[in-house]
Amino acid sequence: MFKTLITLLTTLTLLNFTSVQAAELDDCQPKNIKLWVTATFATAGDAVIIQNKKFKLIGVNSPQLEKKRKFNTTGQPLAKQSQTKLNQLLANHDLLVGVEYDTQKVDDFDRGLVHLFVKEKGKIINLNKLMLESGYALAKSEHNNNLHQICYYQAEKKARNAKIALWGLEAKNPQLQYPIAISSEISTADDGYRIYTGKILTVSKSSRNYILNMDTTGIRVPKKYWGNFNYAQLEALKGKTIEARGYGFLYKGAMFVRIQSPNAINLLNQVH
Image 1 (tube, rainbow, N blue to C red):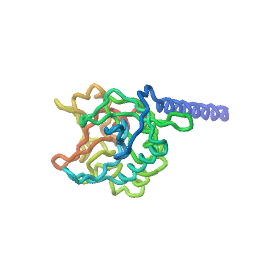
Image 2 (image 1 turned 135 degrees about the vertical axis):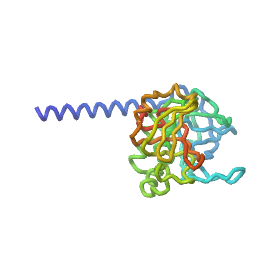
Image 3 (image 1 turned 135 degrees about the horizontal axis):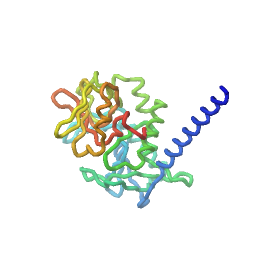
Image 4 (image 1 turned 45 degrees about the vertical axis):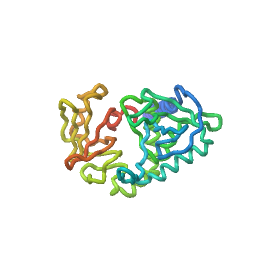
């Protein structure tokens, strides 16, 4: 009887693992590639020049490169290596990419938004996924471009579990607060896109935002994105330690992160 139970549990575990793998593989496949075109080069680990126009990879955020032009932007760890990795992936596939659009095709800065694919040994491979699997980029969620979310979060999880690139850096140098920033240890240098972690102390709402406060980090859901969230689920996060990913910005000595999708919070992410 005991052996039979163990066998049954093992079988169910394997079936569940296989179904998760199948869902991930299926979600990585293109839905509608519009064209195949030659890329020029990567300007960052999540940005590519194609036909003289900059395109951002949907669902991917790479470390910020240092900028010293109009505004001085501090670079994040492994930013240059992330850019190099994407250029290597492009070069390894003869710069030929398949372009797939999502709901929103252009961002507020007139950059194209795309899922890119490459051909490898007769197969079509998701390039965004390859960057996340490399560990040189983080998964990102927005309210309107949701294709391949299972694929991207599972790719990031694979790199995180293997502790490679950014995840290896985080394991060896947690004091860098990147890519994971601990709310109780936040400093003015910990802005930009990263994963903020801490215990949710209060949950409330104003006329403009759903409000989730850690000790020194505030998570905000602007009203135009409320339709993506279940407020009762947000209230249930009180007292729990979460990870929330997004662009952190300083305001009156505190760090704030605006999010658009429940997938930006690990405990609400159904595809993580």
